[in-house]
Structures are given as structure tokens and as C-alpha cells.
Length: 319
Image 1 (tube, rainbow, N blue to C red):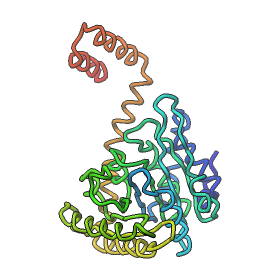
Image 2 (image 1 turned 30 degrees about the horizontal axis):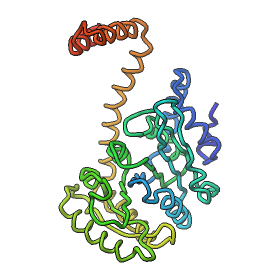
Image 3 (image 1 turned 135 degrees about the vertical axis):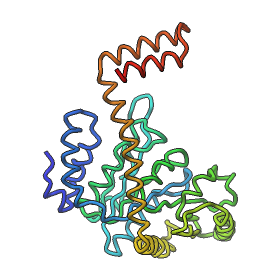
Image 4 (image 1 turned 90 degrees about the vertical axis):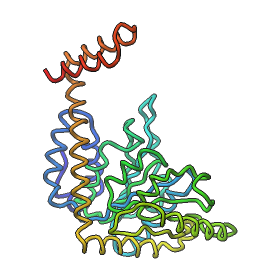
């Protein structure tokens, strides 16, 4: 049983238990989780939701730890939801983020939660949105969502955060880093990480190239995407990134775009949940499950075309 008062006071143990409840796939836990989410909803929403992505090796964990500790030094409480890739074979997940962010995880004003993706699209955890609400209710005013890498998951995460930050290596050119143009169009800021030591001149060149490239990207009229460099390891320019995010929050709240964006995200969430809940209902229906197995068998044997089998199955669901 989750003690609501302890959760609202920001007790990390209560928050961890609440997220475990939300992530559970047991039907009875789902009912209890929905009741809890309804209770915490009036206490949520008071944070800046920051999505962080980048190619493997860009230093996401080092950046999140350094930036998280900087945010705490500015008086904030920081929650990190790090989405881990679940193994499609065993269902197991790496869940090593606390060891990768040792200093941050030990701080009383920080909360780190690795969320197994459960095989969902691009490694995005199915329950991340609910976890965000719980973190906000527990008083965390900066919620950082780390994705596993560059791919479809970025489009999912961009649709649940206020500010989307893409980390880059000090190597010139998109091609070298496997970055899709679409991801740069989603970015509210591009950060060239590891801009230190002998690599600094190369980082400055990359900064200039991305600054030029970003002017050609389509972005919304409420914010002009920025390109900055930093060294998470040496804790350089973290203050500039913080000022930029705060500036974004202030300016978009003033125009009403901040609230408008969140409402649009809720609409998208609603649409996705319809499909998800329908699928869950269908899976638990014995008649439909058996019909699906029979039709799949017919397709596998070449006795029925996939389209005809799918139409027959849909007709059964509607009945």
C-alpha cells in the first residue's frame, strides 16, 4: 500500500514503491495505480521535463550526473528516469544507471530510476509518463528523461517532455554520428559534449557547423533552437545550459505555449492509451486469443492471405 502523505513529502522509498506499482502488469495493481495517479494529479505538473538523448559514447550519464548536481546546487530537486533496453529474449534489463551516476544517486535531493522498456517502441518505457507525474507530486521540479540512444525512441520522448536536448560528440558532420535529420528538428538545443583538452578546436568547429545546420531546420516559432558546447567531465558551461532551459521555461510560459504543448501531449497520450488498453483487453479474452492463434496458423500454412485473416480477426473483435 502506497502512503500518499509520505509520497507527497518527497520520501524516495515511497516514490520508488509508487513507480513499481505503476510499472506492474498485474490487473489488480493497474486498478490501484490508477487510483493513486488520480490522487497525485493535482500535485503534479510543477516541473520542467527535460529529455536527453545522444549517440552511444557521447557521455549522457556523465552529463546527467554533472548537470543534475549543478541543478541541486541551484536549489532544485532532480529526478532521473533512465530508460533501459529490455532484452527481447529474456525480458531482462541492464538497469545500471545508479552505478553510472554514483554521486548523484547518493544525494538526498536526487532520485534515479532506471525503467525497463518492456520491449516497447524504441526502448521507451511504457509507464514513463505516469512516473513523471509521480516524481512531480513528490516535489521534484526537474525531471530528466534519458533515452538509450538515437532511434525511434527519441520521437516518443520528445512527445512527453517540455525541452528536448540532443548531445553530440565533437566530430563534424551528421553522417559521422548517425543522427537523423528528424531528430535535430525535434531538438530545442544541441549540446556538443566533451569540449575540452586537445579536442576543443574540433568541438568549436562542430559547434559552428551545427549552428549553421540548425538554421535550416524547421522549428516552432516559440523558440529558436540553440547550439552550445560543454564539458560534463570538467563541469564547464553547465551554467549556460541551465540559463538556456530556464529562459525557455519563462518565455514559453509567458506566451502560453508551455501549457499548450503539455495539453497537446496529453491528447497524444490519450490516443496511444486507447490502442494499448484495447490490446490488453484482447490478450485477456480467451475466445479472441484462440481465434488469433487459429488465423495465424492458417496464414503460416499458406491457407489464408494475411489481409483476409486480419479482417476476419477485426470483425470478431468488433462483434
